[in-house]
Figure 1 (cartoon, one colour):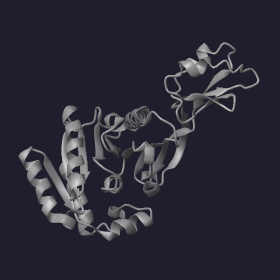
Figure 2 (figure 1 turned 120 degrees about the vertical axis):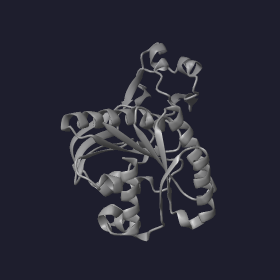
Figure 3 (figure 1 turned 90 degrees about the vertical axis):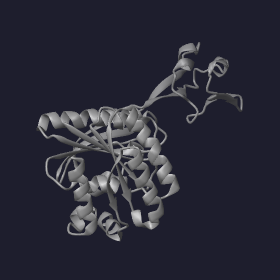
Figure 4 (figure 1 turned 45 degrees about the vertical axis):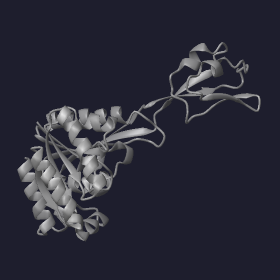
Length: 286
């Protein structure tokens, strides 16, 4: 099984656009959208979901006021300062509550119930070139790293059931917990950067993570000619550190046109120089 994760050190570098282009090059491709905090790959691939399941991210404490005695014990024990006395009434801040369940355990009147946070969802579906597993983390809910793990596990299960060999993972930007969940156990990583100082800096941080996990990594410079001086610096740095620059993609307004029409650039303009470069990058990585 060949698992290729596509990452970026910061948002807006073109990671998802490149992932969509790869996902529509061949049939029998499995795509896992692991950018669960801001999922948008489904807008381009438009999968028809045949499976949907909720994901419990944690718990929130809720007070039953008909039995609450306002003893204040929960206020004393809460280490997250989520419980306070307001207008002579014990109140729990949903934003501050960590869902640790301690208050419900020590409440002498058993007036605090733990309500599961289960508004997040994950899906499996068919898109025009293969199958897609994706998820959406509900606003305010947590454990995005665990949800990424659910998406990846089910992408692998789908690969085993179909016998298909390639899984393309659209990872989240940055270097946080969901990125770690996206990288672990993959074969190769493509880091998409842009010719800016912030893009260059954040690319290095992501490469440190893939190096720690011993994942073969490639760099793609998107919109490279917007600042060719920094593009050259990125290439020189990669050469000094034995990191392959798989390709350089020009700034192309047709990528935006393709997205507006819910297509990838390789579908919208397959004969364009941008599409040819993306195909060359895919062949090199694979």
